[in-house]
Length: 328
Image (tube, rainbow, N blue to C red):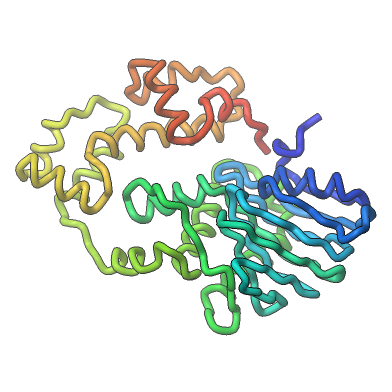
């Protein structure tokens, strides 16, 4: 039997507060659920957990007035009521959420979310590591400081936010078809990346100014050539001298401008790209006998111990965990 944290298809009903808390902890992260003196709920959750970024998309209702306290979610809980309302309290400020105004709980200080008995809502949960990974791809550099969003999502003010929630609505309407569609492992990563990028670009956050400024910058053509070359020949031996010859500039200029536009060195960019290809294969392959060591060697990792360490640093899990994760 699968644990709650392993399940991809999420369809649950319970009248027990303990079960509701356990399920939502496996989806959102640890929190405290106060049932306001009642242990009996009318809890419903219908959704799906996508395989690459471990996002969960669904509909949830508790059927009772509940209060949720969070302080260290390690995920972003994004919700929009279909009916009823909810109220988020952060540092003395209350944000009231109904059908035209969603909420984002970032991994911030203590937050209290009061959900009314008649509230039924869409919910999207994005792990913090997944958010930072996609942001890093947009910025083309590693991200250390977590993303903190404006908690209020106004559909009336921001057309982009309204379109984002429309997309979630359409996805859930067709959820049963997506589950049975062949190749979910292959296309879902693009959809997960799209949702995270669209959220980062449309909802105000502590990286918004940087993202806006970068959208108007264009990297030099020689850097684009170097990146294309790395991605095309990443499974072969690539030396620093090869990249310098291709770039046609001095080593100091190449490394300085590569750092400026991509936030890393050319060879670190190559290493991370190779790791991403290994991860993609392990997370999508249905072949239980796939060899991790052969895959690592094929992508230029000749020291397996170092490869495993770098993989764990990049993805927060061992290669074997990615390989053995339940696939749908």
